Length: 475
Image (cartoon, rainbow, N blue to C red; front, side, top):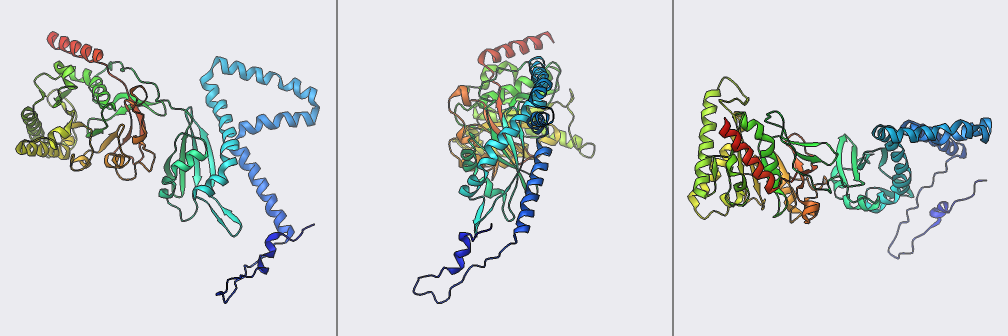
C-alpha cells in the first residue's frame, strides 16, 4: 500500500564535486502510517470546525440542501427549501442594507476567502518571499479571518516567527498583484498578527460637493469630507496643529475652505476667530470678507499678523497659568485658527532674511505653545523638504495629498507611512479623480487613513462671504 517515495532516494545521492571530502546525507525519518492517518484526520476535523465557526451562514446554506435530500429525498427537499430564496429576495428588495450587512457580505467573505485567498495563498507567499520552502516543506504565514466591507477585504494574518511588519510592508505590491487588488495596506492588530486591507472598489473616486453649513456652532472636530470606509472625515483643529502638503492642483484649497466653512457658525457666535495669511493672493482672497482686519498678504503684513497671534497666545498663557491647563472657547477667549496658505513662501523663499527669521520664529512659537491656550495653526505647502519647512515635525496632525516623489510621503507623514500603505505619490493627477484625495496621519495613531475633502467652489466661497458679511452687519 505504501510505496517508496522519491524523497527516500535522497540518502543515496553522492556529490561529484572533486574538492568535496565529506558527503552529508539528509536524514530520512519514516513516520508510521497510523500516525500519518491520525494527523490527516485531525486536520480535516479542525478544518471543518474552523469553517463552520468562521462562515456559519455559508456553511448552513450549502449543507442544508444536501442534508434534506439525503433524509427525505430531493422532491421533499425542494418543497421545503423553495420558500427560502423567495424570502431572501423579498428581504433584499425591502431592506437592502440589513440584508447586505447580515447575509450578503458574509457570503461574499466566504466566497472570496475560498476562491481568492486560500487558492492563491501558498504561491503568493512563496514567490513574494513571505513564506519559505525548506527540506520539502512549506512554512507559510497562517491565513486567518476574512471580513468584507462595502469596499474592501480585511484579511487577518498570523506572521511566521521571526518576521516583522517591515517584511510585509516591503511586499505590498506583491500582495496586491498576487490577489488581484489595486493596492494593499498593512496594520498591526496585536503581537504577531496583522490586518491586510485589499480594496475592491474606490469609494473616493467621485468628487464631493461642498458640505452643508453646520446648524450649531462647533469648534471641532469639523466635518470636511469622507473617509475611505464611508464615514465622515472629521478634522480636529482645536487643540492641535495641522500641516497639509500636496503638489499643485492636489486639493489643498479644498481642505482649507472646508475647514473654514465648518467653523463659520462658531465664528458668527464669537467662539472662533480665523486669521488668514495669503502670500499668493490666489486662494484666501476669495473670502477676504470672512477675515476682516485679520488678513495679510504681503510678507511684512504676514509677519506682523503672526506677531499679534504670538502676543495673544502669551497673554492667555500668563492669565491661565496656575488656573487651567486646557482651553475652552468663550467669547472672551475664542479659539484662534491661523491659516497659512503657502507657508514655504514665507519661511524658505522669502528674500528678506529678517522677515524670514521673524516669521519662522513666530510659527515655531505658535506650534510649540499655542494649542494649550486655544491658538492653532493650519498650514499648507507644496514642497515638504526639511530645508523648506524645518518645523514640520511640530505639527501633530499631518495630511499628504498628491505628491511628486515617494520619498516625500515619509517627509510629510513620518517614517514608515508609505510602507503602511500611504501611497500619496500614486494619487491621480486628474482633478476629477485625485483632487482632495489624501492620507491623514494623526498624533494618536501611526496608521494612515485615506480620505477625500469636499470641493468648495468659487461660488460657494462668495456665498459664504456674502452671508457672513450680512450676518455681521445685522449684528
